[in-house]
Length: 268
Image (tube, rainbow, N blue to C red; front, side, top):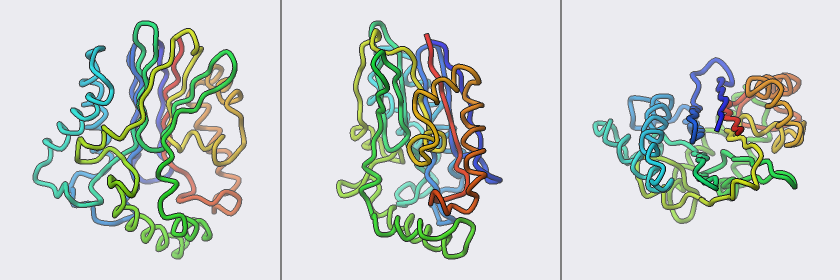
């Protein structure tokens, strides 16, 4: 498997996405926004996704290890790296996870939260994602989206939304992300696809996939053409050009003008 990767921040803040590729593995992590709220951790989200990503690649170096077990092991190992932090804090650094692994005759996938994997097949495209987060707190989400980005009202509404989200995160009444507890791995969505049914695949953070899913400014077929001709860099550059036409989020209401973006494009 040949994997081309790219990740770029959405603005001046440090990038909270992370991506890696090996001849058999593609991993994308999207760190969850803290909205300026306390996390109980002195390290921060960029540190967390870098540690989790590295531990995931190591845990899944064994082709016989299940993706779920590998994720649980990586979560446990990262938690052990900073026991001095308050890992019980509901805002402890966390991330979405999207993993695609090639093995003989099949492609295995794992998704936890809304970073999608898109498979290109002979009859179209299959999107593998976990959208349980969208079912949580729709009223507060709508409140954030009614304000333009960069306004005080938007920032305050986002803080209220994230604070409320934290109380449902990694609970049976909410949604699941990769955080301090390995229990989250058991709630990931997993599956396998026969290799002959897949021509290529893209593993994305939602900062990149939104060109299709949120903005509606491209189809998946156009995205895969873009990835083949210009690579992940062209896809992210196109997202930025689209966002620049709506810098305050009037046409496409969102949490920030530009989100961090990560792409792993897989061919064979």
